[in-house]
Amino acid sequence: MFHHIPHDVLARMRELEQMDSIERRKDTAHFERLRQIPSGTGRFLALIAATAPEGGFIEVGTSGGYSALWISLACRALGRELTTFEIAEAKVELATEMFRKAGVDDIVSVVSGDAREHLGGQSNVAFCFLDTEKDLYEECYEAVIPNLVSGGLLVADNAISHAGSLSGFLDRAESDERIDTMIAPVGKGVLLARRI
Ligand SMILES: C[S@@+](CC[C@H](N)C(=O)[O-])C[C@H]1O[C@@H](n2cnc3c(N)ncnc32)[C@H](O)[C@@H]1O
Image 1 (cartoon, rainbow, N blue to C red):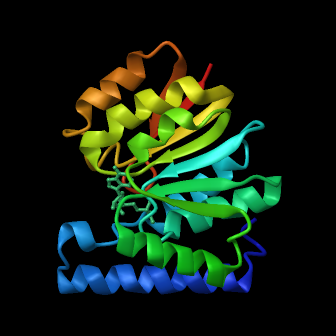
Image 2 (image 1 turned 180 degrees about the vertical axis):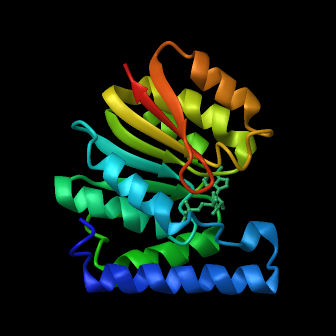
């Protein structure tokens, strides 16, 4: 996956990394910022997603499409499709353009709107990346876990950087007997869960 990332995908990753770093320097308003994952988390997502069982891939929180581009590497390798949800219209437009230019629009689709209105309808989920507002994690988690296939994987970002605000969610996941879980010190810290 990583030795032969298509040129157009790599170019869009670089473009988004640059946009993100410019925003940080300019101190752009929180809700407008891309707030995307570090590249190390992207590699982790692609590797973990590539081990997922049969089923669909979903993402909650597309932003400009950076994490989805990483997950798309696993989709391409396995012949899967990713559906990613984003509520901010400007980001939906940006991500749609990025996926088209990267040549992954045949395997990645963005759904515009509040993910919570769509998650209950996603069946046979093999892989989910949860990266939205922290106060929505628990609600999204409860909607996704029943739809995860056996052996299906859920990764949630910011498990270490936002351990305080996510403590209720992290406690819930750890004690949830439907899954096995751990926190990996990758990037901002990721919760990795596997449906039993
Ligand atoms: C941390 S950013 C996602 C970064 C992205 N995963 C990446 O690494 O490139 C969180 C995103 O969740 C979106 N969001 C917030 N509430 C949402 C909701 N209810 N449904 C879908 N997306 C939402 C925000 O607009 C924002 O773009």
